[in-house]
Every structure is written in structure tokens, then in C-alpha cells.
Length: 409
Image 1 (cartoon, rainbow, N blue to C red):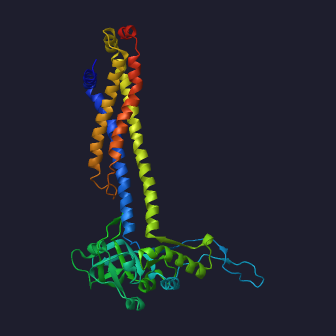
Image 2 (image 1 turned 135 degrees about the vertical axis):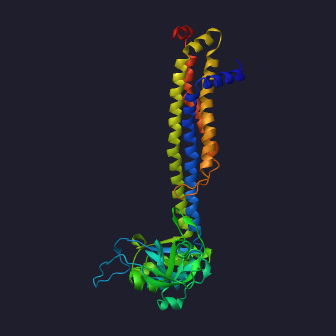
Image 3 (image 1 turned 90 degrees about the vertical axis):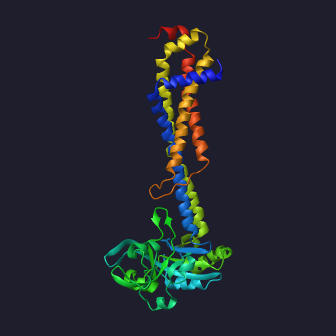
């Protein structure tokens, strides 16, 4: 029997039980579609985070406070020469001022952050990320203004109640009107809007535009108090100076905080470091999503085995008749393997279509970005699943004795 005839017999066998074939195909469709879509979601999330980190600029360095651990101080403090232990210290404005004097540093901006409600008349915007800092923060964070201007060093020194709004916060509070020069209440305190930031877009599941930036002294005086800083944003004079500046920052803060590398109470992170870490984490996340989706393909394969076993049982007499008139075990094996593979390939093709269509929609705040290699991979695995899981039922049919098959009721 020719391959064409075997293929026609396989199609006829599938067409004889349309509902059963459709349900089996659905299992593979869901599996393949899930693999493509979830891998795209993981990739989209990864790119969103990478874009957000890249927007910080290649020359930006962030110094974060950590709890550290008490360790030997830089020098003994007792007369007997016993070792003193340094307690973790907070980041302070004098720390930022010291870093600003380091070689290769263009600016070092102290930062305090809090979440506040902003209001204008009867309109309010809750959960706005409020940052207190100085003018050097804007170029360090690669922020540009679409309206107005940033506040000045003089306004920071005078603790003026001025604020720069993110584009989303400005739209929420003022609609299409120009907010520059208008008054807005920050936690009930009146501030004058001096500028609006250009749109930066989403960062993962959150928006980077629902923000407000005000002078450090104003935010500390009115909201957070004159205590520790959340972080210090340092801008290197060029991207090539980042590694050198990171070493300078570590040396200066180790000396000021009397710490060693083993018990440092701060972390120094550049955009490239964050990008590398985020990429590694996102890759792991994407692989995990793909593995979870692949379970659906495994379940679909088990479904093919079950359905083909039922099919072989129902067609036992047919198998006996075909063997009696000369069909070889190889022909029977090929027919049932073809049926199983067709089921999985049809399901795989429909799953590819469903997965690609699904990537056109935003899912839980993430815009999926298809991974081209996942499409042929998912489809190829679906075809192999048909061959693998259809092998046992097909082999069972091929090994039937004609006399036993003909007697089967």
C-alpha cells in the first residue's frame, strides 16, 4: 500500500469520529498555544524591564542603603587596641555631597521617596510616587520635560513648594489643560507645578509616569523628615567612567561609614549591572513559563494515547479483515501512527494560530513579544508527541493476530 493510500485511510478514520478527533485536537491546540503565548509574555515582561532600566542612562549609578552587618571598623578605637565594630549607617546628604566631589562624577543627587495623594480641585490621584531630590536627578535619570522646566538649586536651598509632574499624573489631575503655573495639593500641602515630564511608559506592571518630583528639602520638611535617604543617584561624566566611579563610590562610603566590603551597608548598582541581573531573572522566568505551558502538551499527548487505544479497540474487526486480505503489520502501524500524528499536527497548527493571535493583546499589563523560535519548536514538539504517544496504540494494532481480531465482538 502506497503512502498516499495510507494517508487517505488515516483521514477516513479520523473523519469517522469527528467529535472525538476535535476534542483530542483541542488538547494539543491549548498546549501549543499556551507555550507560544506564555513565552511571549515572559519575553515581553523582560523587554519592558530592560527598557525601563536602559532609560536610566548608561552613565547612571544608584547607591542603595542596605542593612549590612556589624563588622570590624576601619581602625581600633580603644586605647588597648581592641577592635571596634561598626554598625550599619544610613545614607545621608553629606554622603551625597562627598560623592559629588569624586573623580569622574558629574553629579550626585540625594533621593527620598514616598507615595502620596495629589489633588486638584475635585480631582485626586492616589498612589503617586513622590521623589524629593535636586536638579541633578533629571539628567541622571534621563528625564526630559515636555512642558515648563525643572526646579533650581536655589529653590532646593529655599525649600520652595514646587513640583514637576509625570505625564500620567498631570493628565489625571489637569486633563488636557497646561498644568504649569497651576497649584496642586500634595498630601494636602499646596505646591506650584513648574514642569511636566515627557512620557516614559510602563515599567513592568507599573507606570513610570505616575510620579512627581520636588525639592529634597521641601519633601523632607513637609513629609518624610530630615532622616535617612532612600538612595543616591550618581551620574558619571561618561559611560566609560562608570566602572571607575563605582570603585570611587565604594572607597568613599567605606571610609565614611567605617565599613569593609564584607559588611558594607550599601549597594552600588549601575544600569548595566541592573540590566544583566534583570535579563538573567527574566530568562529564568520565561523558561519557567514555557515549562508550565509544556505540561499542557504532555496532557494532550496522554489524551492522544487514550483516544487511539479506544479507536484500536473499536476497529479490531476492521484490523482483522485488512490483515486477512493481505495488509502487513507495517501498513497497520503506519496508518494508526499517521492518524495520531495528524491529530497532533492539526492541533499544533491551530495552536500556533491561537498563540500568535493571543500575542496581539495585552495580558496582565504586559504586551507579549513573540519569540520566533518558540513557534516552530512548539509545532515540532506537537508532531513528535503524536508519533510518541501514538506509537503504543499503533503497535498494539499492528501486532494483532488476524484470527483473534476477526473473532472480536
